[in-house]
Image (cartoon, rainbow, N blue to C red):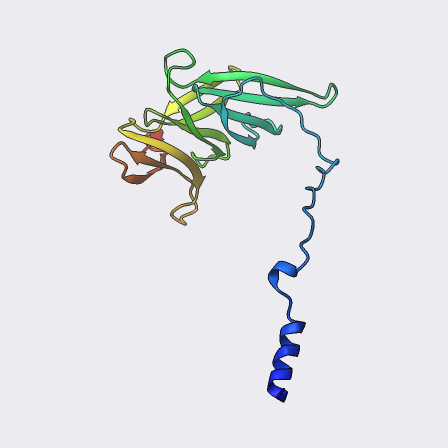
Length: 195
């Protein structure tokens, strides 16, 4: 036997076939971290967007949620009792729940650039809305920012999109013919409306 043949045999003996390689046994997934606690705070199972903000501009952070059936909800935590209070603030659309006017997107921001936090959302009829808390009347008011249209809003953002120091309300949508679009709504102090 030649030296090359001996080296080849030794090399082959030292190599293991993939089938002979021991396989690690299947490991069980780790248990959930016991430091987390889950508590259901909503009675409405159709909530599709939430945001945490000082929506009443009173220094208290609350959770706000938008539902598939057009409802805007608020949850307040009461530390002394450890309980959450749920309030349906208002509905978008004129029909009762389940009418198909889906609430898409929910954001909080200062769209009017007046240091007052408001909520912003859109519905399946193409309208973009602003929701403001009126402290004097202890009620919520809604304002349409546009005339709606044949598009399906998908998201809302509030921010300085022009780098000019002022906030604008942006909504993105898909038209019925599936062309994407982004709309910008800018507050005008002169006309007291969005343009």
